[in-house]
Image 1: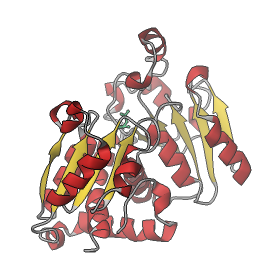
Image 2 (image 1 turned 90 degrees about the horizontal axis):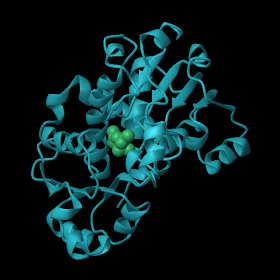
Image 3 (image 1 turned 90 degrees about the vertical axis):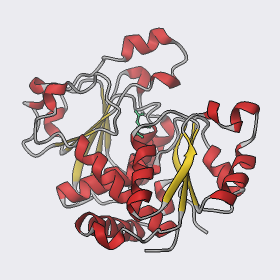
Image 4 (image 1 turned 60 degrees about the vertical axis):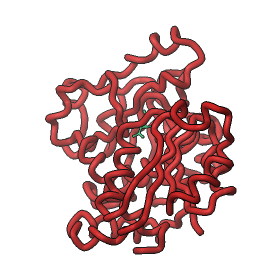
Length: 303
Ligand code: NCD
């Protein structure tokens, strides 16, 4: 039985197969409409979510399966003090596969070790968010036609943003990917990531200004300042509007630079950018559904 805890759990060949499957699902959804008949997905979300949970649920329903679960720790037995390992043992009796989001780093991993069904990490604290990374990679592959030979700027909260951490770990396996980290000093990418890049000899730069760097980028990955992971509100308020991508900054960017964002957006991308053809963050949401359909089929060995 296979779980998904980190994007590194799949080799790049396995990822290629997963993305090919997602691309086929996009083209021929009717072929997959009954692949999961009578299968059940449990979504165990101990932290708020719109896209990830609904995307998993929509994916399973589009495969012919059913869904159950909870979207708030307070409405589950966690509020009574039940452990994640007891909860997953219970959920294993009711479902065939589980997507779990948890504010504690490593909680889905603990669940996986006690589970009778495949567990998918749907985001654990500030650590990893592998299915967002699969979404990001499929978006890049589909719209740029490749997963190598580009410069990617990651901008915003690079300290607490789990989507950033997962995406960097996944992208280092592709050739000639250069990283430009753009963040305020307080929200720099963690040392374990820059140390990993140095060890692997992968080029990266760290900057504070988006204006000064945007013209060099093939991809710009914007992120929200992660309010819920701050220790005090004052720091959040000081940093939350540090970056606002607007038309003026977009005019400095390459004509084919793509703007991605895992969403939810707060203020970091002005709505005026939404109509720019380079803004692909809502397309990204659609790719997220296809890739989760492909993932469910793969982990249930129905592909
Ligand atoms: C991200 C998350 O939850 O980490 N959202 C998502 O799943 N698409 C990003 C965020 O919350 O900022």
